[in-house]
Image 1 (tube, protein in one colour):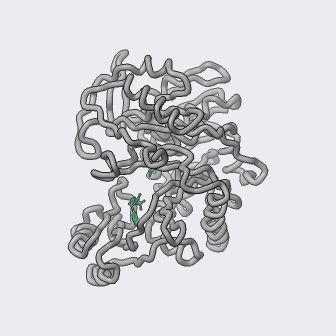
Image 2 (tube, rainbow, N blue to C red):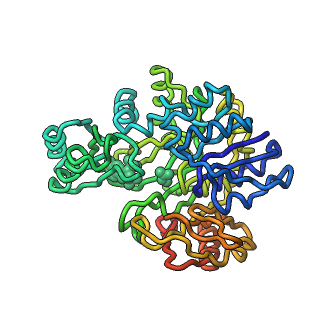
Image 3 (spheres, rainbow, N blue to C red):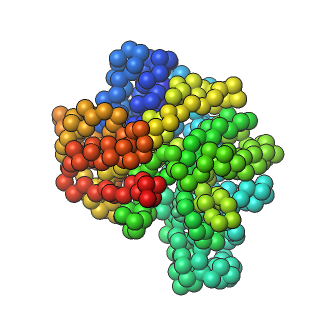
Length: 430
Ligand code: AMP
Ligand code: GLY
């Protein structure tokens, strides 16, 4: 098979690494890829993965590439091309692609749609309202004492959620999004949710339009600084499993969310083939969905895929074909930990082109894989080219050993002004 992967982050490197292990794959491209992705070799042929210099949102360029090279399967990593309708476009061309179509991707691309869907189909979520008008939004926030999450409806580069703890903050957030248009048309409508307290975890389920197969738990670390302080980021590290749910509890949570979700999709004619990634808050009243994503999490993918025993090509094919019910997901019980090394200043402004040292030493470490995110190759040097630079991942007999192995690799790597959190997985080890 020939496979085209779309995206350039740590998630896509993990996808490419896992897909390259499949005996089904003879050729692989990644658009646009990064310096680590093009170092991967296919298990079957030894052939290297090729980066293609086309951005993940350049649907016209990507379509021309796919028409010319006819990949047997295209695998979409990020949310934006899904929201832009890349799956529908490929289907029109008779090209096979894995990911939700534009209508199904609305679970992520419209927070209003997702909130209304959850309420209509009885999926546990925060108390919430949908608003287009400042005064009505402010009145609703007042009923919550100003303690709320104000969310722009559309995609806003992961920045469209403002957490407020009093009315002054809530009014400011509503004004920024609705009146000042801080997120453009993505903020023409907003969702205000009550603030939920508890432990936040990530769930993933692979779906084929009829069935949903739940993954183990994972936990991301969204804030930039130790102790969950500082600004929200794309994710500074993750580990799996998160020990806050027992296996029977996870099964029960999966049912509480996925059964009504599948019934709702059937009732509304939504054909979801891809990953549903609900962000969950474990509250005193039980688990509640904060949001849905319609793709793999980043950096959750970096901790899930080293644990996945199945052939990922076969799983994605079953997701496209609607035959997932026949397959059991199999997981390595050993925990995994991913520590993100970021450029100093991220998620604000940062410098690029810093040479990265120590990648060869880290590559020799057992049970360790360094996934690249914002990296580029300049001559024979790998340099930084983005905010999140590397996802340094390791696995081990228990979580502590996995964590220690990940940090041993982090300590072997360096670049000027590197920033990372020292407390990934600390909540689980406490
Ligand atoms: P979202 O993009 O909707 O997941 O929001 C980004 C982050 O904001 C989440 O990962 C949570 O940490 C936080 N958040 C979102 N909604 C709520 C809520 N209703 N209560 C508390 N925290 C929230
Ligand atoms: N782990 C955060 C995200 O992928 O949105």
